[in-house]
Image (cartoon, rainbow, N blue to C red):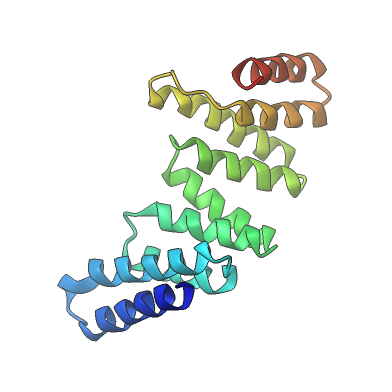
Length: 168
Protein backbone atom coordinates (compact mmCIF):
# COMPACT_ATOMS: atom_id res chain seq x y z
CA UNK A 1 0.00 0.00 0.00
CA UNK A 2 2.85 2.43 0.86
CA UNK A 3 4.59 1.81 -2.44
CA UNK A 4 1.35 2.19 -4.37
CA UNK A 5 0.55 5.49 -2.61
CA UNK A 6 3.99 6.91 -3.37
CA UNK A 7 3.86 5.67 -6.97
CA UNK A 8 0.47 7.38 -7.47
CA UNK A 9 1.78 10.63 -6.01
CA UNK A 10 4.95 10.48 -8.13
CA UNK A 11 2.87 9.81 -11.25
CA UNK A 12 0.73 12.85 -10.42
CA UNK A 13 3.87 15.00 -10.20
CA UNK A 14 5.09 13.64 -13.53
CA UNK A 15 1.74 14.30 -15.17
CA UNK A 16 1.49 17.80 -13.70
CA UNK A 17 5.00 18.64 -14.85
CA UNK A 18 4.04 17.79 -18.44
CA UNK A 19 1.85 20.90 -18.53
CA UNK A 20 4.23 23.88 -18.46
CA UNK A 21 1.47 26.47 -18.82
CA UNK A 22 1.01 29.22 -16.25
CA UNK A 23 -2.42 27.87 -15.48
CA UNK A 24 -0.97 24.56 -14.34
CA UNK A 25 1.30 26.05 -11.66
CA UNK A 26 -1.21 25.40 -8.90
CA UNK A 27 -1.71 21.84 -10.12
CA UNK A 28 2.07 21.24 -10.08
CA UNK A 29 2.39 22.73 -6.61
CA UNK A 30 -0.44 20.57 -5.32
CA UNK A 31 1.08 17.46 -6.87
CA UNK A 32 4.46 18.16 -5.25
CA UNK A 33 2.81 18.76 -1.87
CA UNK A 34 0.94 15.45 -2.11
CA UNK A 35 4.16 13.60 -2.91
CA UNK A 36 5.75 15.28 0.12
CA UNK A 37 2.84 14.13 2.28
CA UNK A 38 3.21 10.57 1.01
CA UNK A 39 6.92 10.53 1.84
CA UNK A 40 6.50 12.30 5.19
CA UNK A 41 3.71 9.96 6.29
CA UNK A 42 6.21 7.14 5.87
CA UNK A 43 9.04 8.99 7.67
CA UNK A 44 11.03 9.49 4.48
CA UNK A 45 12.14 12.94 5.61
CA UNK A 46 14.95 13.46 3.09
CA UNK A 47 12.57 12.68 0.23
CA UNK A 48 9.67 14.73 1.58
CA UNK A 49 11.66 17.90 2.29
CA UNK A 50 12.51 18.84 -1.33
CA UNK A 51 8.92 18.07 -2.37
CA UNK A 52 7.66 20.65 0.11
CA UNK A 53 10.32 23.11 -1.00
CA UNK A 54 9.13 22.70 -4.59
CA UNK A 55 5.47 22.99 -3.56
CA UNK A 56 6.18 26.24 -1.73
CA UNK A 57 8.22 27.60 -4.65
CA UNK A 58 5.22 27.00 -6.90
CA UNK A 59 2.64 28.08 -4.31
CA UNK A 60 4.21 30.91 -2.26
CA UNK A 61 0.77 31.78 -0.89
CA UNK A 62 0.73 28.39 0.89
CA UNK A 63 3.28 28.75 3.72
CA UNK A 64 2.04 25.50 5.24
CA UNK A 65 4.35 23.73 2.78
CA UNK A 66 7.25 25.78 4.08
CA UNK A 67 6.32 24.69 7.60
CA UNK A 68 6.16 21.01 6.55
CA UNK A 69 9.62 21.42 4.97
CA UNK A 70 10.90 22.61 8.35
CA UNK A 71 9.30 19.63 10.11
CA UNK A 72 11.13 17.27 7.76
CA UNK A 73 14.45 19.05 8.23
CA UNK A 74 13.97 18.90 12.00
CA UNK A 75 13.11 15.20 11.90
CA UNK A 76 16.22 14.56 9.79
CA UNK A 77 18.35 16.29 12.44
CA UNK A 78 19.13 19.37 10.33
CA UNK A 79 18.22 21.80 13.09
CA UNK A 80 20.03 24.88 11.75
CA UNK A 81 18.26 24.56 8.39
CA UNK A 82 14.98 23.76 10.12
CA UNK A 83 15.27 26.90 12.24
CA UNK A 84 15.75 29.08 9.16
CA UNK A 85 12.66 27.58 7.57
CA UNK A 86 10.64 27.85 10.80
CA UNK A 87 11.61 31.52 11.09
CA UNK A 88 10.19 32.19 7.65
CA UNK A 89 7.10 30.08 8.27
CA UNK A 90 6.42 31.72 11.62
CA UNK A 91 6.65 35.17 10.03
CA UNK A 92 3.97 34.11 7.54
CA UNK A 93 1.81 32.08 9.92
CA UNK A 94 1.92 34.35 12.95
CA UNK A 95 -1.43 33.17 14.31
CA UNK A 96 -0.72 29.45 14.06
CA UNK A 97 0.33 28.10 17.45
CA UNK A 98 1.95 24.90 16.19
CA UNK A 99 4.24 26.82 13.83
CA UNK A 100 5.30 29.20 16.59
CA UNK A 101 5.81 26.24 18.93
CA UNK A 102 8.09 24.43 16.47
CA UNK A 103 10.04 27.63 16.00
CA UNK A 104 10.37 28.06 19.77
CA UNK A 105 11.33 24.46 20.40
CA UNK A 106 14.00 24.46 17.70
CA UNK A 107 15.43 27.81 18.79
CA UNK A 108 15.63 26.64 22.41
CA UNK A 109 17.32 23.39 21.39
CA UNK A 110 19.94 25.47 19.59
CA UNK A 111 20.42 27.69 22.67
CA UNK A 112 18.69 30.75 21.24
CA UNK A 113 16.75 31.48 24.42
CA UNK A 114 15.44 34.95 23.60
CA UNK A 115 14.26 33.91 20.14
CA UNK A 116 12.60 30.83 21.66
CA UNK A 117 10.82 32.98 24.24
CA UNK A 118 9.38 35.27 21.59
CA UNK A 119 8.16 32.33 19.54
CA UNK A 120 6.50 30.66 22.54
CA UNK A 121 4.89 33.99 23.49
CA UNK A 122 3.48 34.22 19.94
CA UNK A 123 2.21 30.65 20.24
CA UNK A 124 0.27 31.57 23.37
CA UNK A 125 -0.96 34.85 21.88
CA UNK A 126 -2.20 33.01 18.77
CA UNK A 127 -4.68 31.07 20.89
CA UNK A 128 -6.90 34.15 20.89
CA UNK A 129 -7.38 33.59 17.14
CA UNK A 130 -9.03 30.29 18.05
CA UNK A 131 -11.68 32.08 20.07
CA UNK A 132 -9.85 31.76 23.36
CA UNK A 133 -11.46 28.42 24.13
CA UNK A 134 -8.55 26.32 22.89
CA UNK A 135 -5.40 26.70 24.93
CA UNK A 136 -2.30 24.54 24.66
CA UNK A 137 -0.49 23.33 27.77
CA UNK A 138 2.55 22.60 25.60
CA UNK A 139 3.02 26.28 24.80
CA UNK A 140 3.14 27.12 28.49
CA UNK A 141 5.64 24.34 29.13
CA UNK A 142 7.81 25.62 26.29
CA UNK A 143 7.75 29.17 27.60
CA UNK A 144 8.39 27.87 31.12
CA UNK A 145 11.55 26.14 29.83
CA UNK A 146 12.69 29.49 28.47
CA UNK A 147 11.95 31.20 31.79
CA UNK A 148 14.00 28.55 33.60
CA UNK A 149 16.93 29.21 31.24
CA UNK A 150 16.51 32.91 32.02
CA UNK A 151 16.33 32.12 35.77
CA UNK A 152 12.88 33.70 35.97
CA UNK A 153 11.66 31.08 38.40
CA UNK A 154 8.33 32.60 39.46
CA UNK A 155 7.18 33.08 35.88
CA UNK A 156 8.17 29.51 35.06
CA UNK A 157 6.21 28.26 38.05
CA UNK A 158 3.07 30.20 37.05
CA UNK A 159 3.28 28.87 33.48
CA UNK A 160 3.72 25.28 34.67
CA UNK A 161 0.76 25.54 37.01
CA UNK A 162 -1.34 26.89 34.17
CA UNK A 163 -0.18 24.01 31.96
CA UNK A 164 -1.23 21.52 34.64
CA UNK A 165 -4.65 23.14 34.87
CA UNK A 166 -5.07 22.81 31.12
CA UNK A 167 -3.83 19.23 30.97
CA UNK A 168 -3.83 17.52 34.38
